[in-house]
Image (cartoon, rainbow, N blue to C red; front, side, top):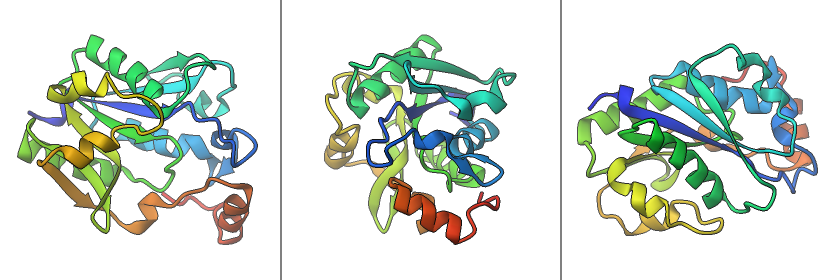
Length: 206
């Protein structure tokens, strides 16, 4: 299959507890932190993107994309805790849209590039639906990850904050696509953010 059947599920409902504020709304490069990964996803060969957010918070980082028709916001309630709940909410919408596969992405990965996402999509096209295709950092699987519809029923049973890690651990056909270390750089705390700014993070980093 080609990339037109792969729908992105961007997880953006985290509490940002370590940051103490909604980090996705922080200034980052020419825009806001959350806008980076989301804009990258929309520019990639994904056929559509569902972004899963916390329905109570404000999401200024989505404002630049309001006229873009290639995405839809999915809100979860404050009580729906854990990464798995966000994933399942996005998965339900993707299934309704007839997705052949989903790519799970994190909204707080601002250094992921369109080329990286397209590299994962190309790898998935080569190996097919029996395989899981995951970004990798020195052999360790990390998001973004592509799951075909073969895995949807298993993803729908996940609980808590484990996300899809258990499936990745126990499935023998996992294609790991090594990405540059910068792709996985975390900005989880205010200290992380200040270090980034000091290093010149007010420039466009993508």
